[in-house]
Image (cartoon, rainbow, N blue to C red):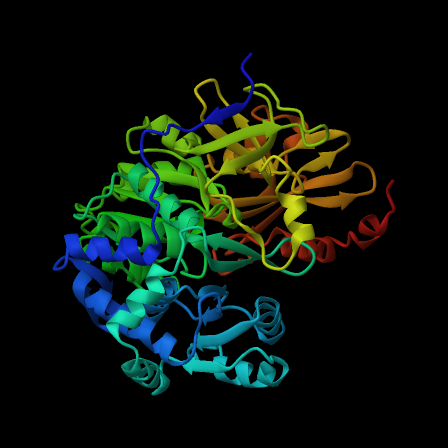
Length: 546
């Protein structure tokens, strides 16, 4: 058998330039093609117009005293100003700190303090989020925070006006002082325990990851990419915005926060050729009442990523949304983010059942979580990767960095995966999510995939709950298709004889939706806590184990 280790091809040269230089090159090639379309703000700009706005914002940052290496926080849903700040900070060498728009005061204070933000750009409010009130509550405890810009107020015009004292030559001089290996972005990643860690990414890392992601989607300047995923995560700002600016494709922003109706309307109205989303977003779009009436004739590709992608959902996206060339990407914030992806040239079977093969210039391997030894292809192991895409480290946290990246430069993901003889990778679960029922290792993903095959089931999430006899028992939270009805016993009977008896869920909970993070990831920790309370399993949960 072959060892589960793979290296991507190297025939596509990597970009050895900064994000600002790359943007300028795209503007020179396609000055009059559309760059940014934001229907909810009535904004439509060509690349030359977009570049002029970015430069004005960049000068504004310099005019307010933002120096190379200063941290600038961005805390907002998806608005055009988010994109302007993304490219403007890159042009002046400031490190943009992405702040989850769902954060509240404690989390906001932690991120701003830990990163040492000099400036924060945000809105005064959005829906139920009173951003200004929260900033004012914590501002006195943040000695590094000099400026706060509320971009939905006169502050934005004042920021632009501050750039009047900065010449084109001043901006060019600043841009020339930057290096492609400089830190340019900090993204906070939350584990199941402890404080969030600030994954620090470079121009080179995120620019080249976007280059290769776009290549897998076969992007050109003719493409129009609908980006409903949040900018604060790599999916939106790297795979979305940066991939567009590299190839000259249009960034189309359908809504500030995800709204399936707005996404479907925008894809049709703007003739989008590509659509992004996490699986739950696509489930909502497929199930929307307006789907059948929409014209998706322009749509051909897109990316489903961010959490495990159900095979049945992938098939429906291809069949019902005309996304014949849809791809799956896999990675993590710490890897800029993608390390494997399917390609438009892969077979449908590979594109719906795997997360593809390793990207060019990237290495991957699967190791035994206990011994660290590389496993054989076909076996299960922890997915590890190294290459240009691996983060510089966690901001001001060398200990956590050393835990994640080993001495040989391998980033350890915590995900369990398999790799076939052709190098295609399949994610089978999280090491920490694995359920151990009576000594049997059970991976939730396998059961979820099976439950999806029931015609009444729209979505399913499987967790382990404590059990005094077996240690853990299996529980499924199940979302049914609209108008469908299903009993516990009927679903269990469906499982009998098709999956091993110990994998059949003992507990089934029918729900309308799941507790989610802003990025659309299901909060299984919260599901487990609620299930323990609802099922009265506190005693089993409190039992001590070795």
